[in-house]
Length: 117
Length: 114
Image (cartoon, rainbow over all chains, first blue to last red; front, side, top):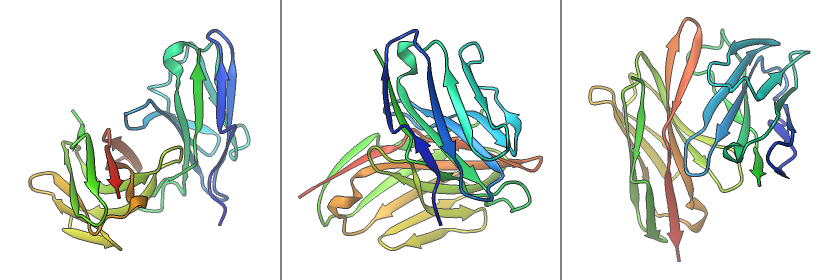
């Protein structure tokens, strides 16, 4: 079974530039998550999709971050304009979704390491 | 407030030795607790999952314990190998209105040296 795919794996940009990350979840997984993981910290949930609808985006800095999952499959996360403090690993995860019980396991992709200079 | 705290923050051990990592949580209502292993430059991979009624769960050389009364969990690694060098993250899930909300610890960075 193919895992969660993310691209690019690494990205270096200057502050105030724009950047976009792509995620393809495991086939059949209804729920998709984007996390931000700053060095030395645990992942922080940015946004959660259920199919193509947003379930939780309470911690997404909406003035500069946006995400979409138009067809309910793959997703993009965009930062515009980037700030130095956005340097982090951006992880995408997917799970089967509601109805699978309390053990709805999330499977993580390899992440995109973003460096803002 | 829902929180997950891990200790120690980092740990260095000799190859072949055992070690124990700690996780304390205040998440409610508790659904399950997972331990993830995150290699450098990779996403987290699930090692074990325990629900309220489970006290211990093993996965090879990894053994996790859960005390739901004291809200503590531990991950014990036996006969460590160089490949065990990674961050170990404790994640507690709260199940509400049909959705799982995950609360992540900051992780313990384990380094195994020859």
